[in-house]
Amino acid sequence: MAVATTAAEPAHVERDWLAIKRFGLWLFFLSESLVFGLLLASRFFIEGIHREHLDQNLGLAITSILLVSSITAFWAEGSIANGNKKGFVWGLALTIVMGTVFAVGVGYEWSIAEFSRTESFGTVFFAMTGVHAAHVISGVIMLIILLVLGIKGRYTAESHWPVAAVVMYWHFVDVVWVFFYPALYLVD
Image (cartoon, rainbow, N blue to C red; front, side, top):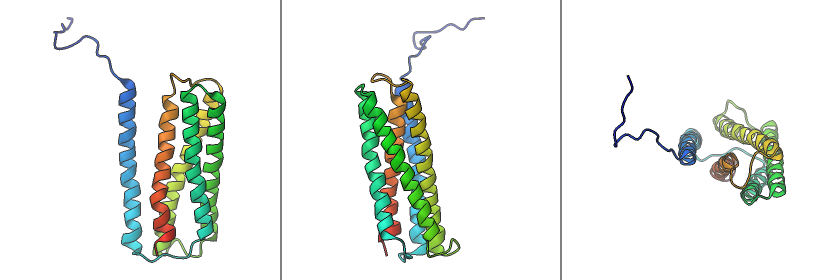
């Protein structure tokens, strides 16, 4: 028995899939903001204001590298949106290199830390930087996938939503570090 449709129930509903994807990405950012916000709050709740010795020069260097990587990611996205494949490839490649340098810098900071993981600041420091570094590494992996697919011609000026989504993720991770860096390295 066939179900009849009425004027109020269209037989075929057109969906704006791009709007749905964008909404889903923003929901993801909201959920991640809660995770990072709780980590940031725990820094002050567990440890108070006291901060252990950290390498200020290293912290500033990796922060600068991560912030500049947002510029190259933006360049890559803008390039593919304008049909500039060469700019897209260069922008992604530079972003991948800088993201990798950031993650290695965090790992180096861990190796020279003058405090234990069992101390309260150590627990907070390693949790905050570890969760953030995991997001940076996942971002680098996504950027590598975009680079490979982009070189193969997958993205065009008319069709590049995955590039926009990953670059927005990259900017999100950078903004999180803008809050983490002062909480870990500057507040004493």
